[in-house]
Length: 578
Image (cartoon, rainbow, N blue to C red; front, side, top):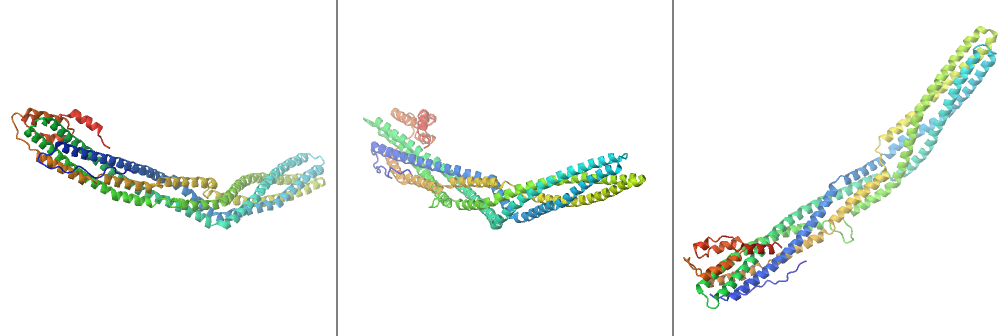
């Protein structure tokens, strides 16, 4: 913070018609120095205040940008999806467990018809050998028996593959049921409360951060308002530099007049120049008092906005414990996520197994259906061969009776194959239906990598919270410091009344001592010299306007405003804004 080092004092009023030009010059020079010192200090204070506002705006614009993006919204949406998935888990489990029971039960039930089917194939193979024996080398029957055995080999191969695939599925069902049971125990403990709390805490944090974003925007708007008024005040501080320059020019005029007055002053010339300097001092005083009053009002206008800014920043200032807004909702969300993790891990394990079992079962069911078609064709082929054997054995008389008996057995066994294959097909249909139901549950549910999604979402909201904390942290301190800067500036320029009093009394003393003379056809040479010297110091159009009123000849009245421009340019370069 900048403290005032110059007290609100000035030169004592100076009276007397003629006065003491040295004392007048010293009084005006002192006021010029005091104004310059105070306004430079005020400019530095306002520059510091402006820098604080710029930092506040930049910091909170980062908060707004971070919270207006889609990342936090998407993270919260993912958490809601996970919560919904977990909430629906019991009903999903009912469907999956029922499907697993069906698949496992049908797989077990298939063992009996498969075993009987295999035994029947072995009996048929024996029947084929019996045909060869009963035919006793008769033409065609040996080839017929070989063909039937070949077809039976195909059926046996298909059935072995069928049994192996079915065994793979049923083994997987046991693992899936174990995972589902573990998941059911975990879900019974935490559902529905934990998923609901996760969704609720995620929403609370989103609302908290959204509220922080709204507050950040309000603070930014207030800070921008303060920034605009401070910028206006900084511009208004130019009156200090303007007043200092004009007073220095009046002092320079007094010095020039003193030099002209020695050793024998021309009272008429002296009075005219003093009248000019009095007019410059009076005009300078009027401008200073008017602009200083406007500057004071501008600073007063900053006060309420700075106070409002402090109030807004105080709404989100760090607490005595060092915590910041958003910490509590974030901690609750982290606790909810920790509670969900164990359940989420078991859910993913069950999902993976169910996916694997469901997909494998569908593939196996399709393969089993194809194998059943092959077996059913073999069954028809065997039946056809039995009929052919019976027909061909009848004309053979007693020799054909044995073949007929074998053919009858083959027909009976083939009918058993047909019945067993129908039972197998029905059970395979149950397995396929269960696998499709499980697949429908899996594909109909929002599926995400729960652990990864939770990690990503939590990190996202943590980042958002960090940006909010960093953006809002310390704002109350900075806003208070801003207010101190503004107050300091107001105190630094609060002496305008005292300065005005000194300027007014000194201007009055100059006016009392001065007396403008009427225009002459030819002015005294020394007057023209001193007026030219004074005019050469001017750096402002207003000074030249006042000067024109004291021109002594028409030629001087037409004095171009470029007189003293070189000095003006240098002066302005040296004494720019603060």
